[in-house]
Image 1 (cartoon, rainbow, N blue to C red):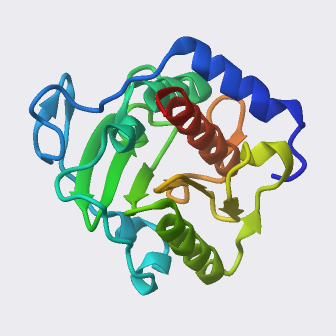
Image 2: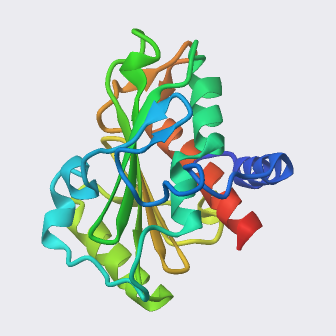
Length: 218
């Protein structure tokens, strides 16, 4: 990851900003309500900790500043931009089925890629842990990184100026403001799609796509 071409991060960020970003993952009245429908997609899934190799089970989730459902920024992980990125990178014939969940201050969107293409077995999780402030989010991020035995910091321009790390099994984790974003591609094969994209590269691309949306709407 640290050997990524220096211009990739800035080029990707600029490209996504030019396309605009969806501010919500669900239609009016469905925010934070797993089980509701959104177009052809149905929602209602598992929580974040079940898909992160057990690391989060030992980390106390940071408290949110306010009660209620996920923020509009968090719901972007189940929006058009990561979906479009997945379809383009993996050359999918149709949009994968998604389910989402809001629990323990974490919004999780699970993409069932195996239902969109038999060539991409498995599923992918994108989650956002919402904290009450930036300091609490960074504390949570640091604890996650410390508990991941194979965590490698993402440095240079590749981290877009945010604390970030990746793991060998295909996770990319970034901290921005009061959010900790995790893209978990560990449930996918080591390489996916017609161009044999590594799951680490896929996780990174999705993470930076979402970060670009957050920058635009920040």
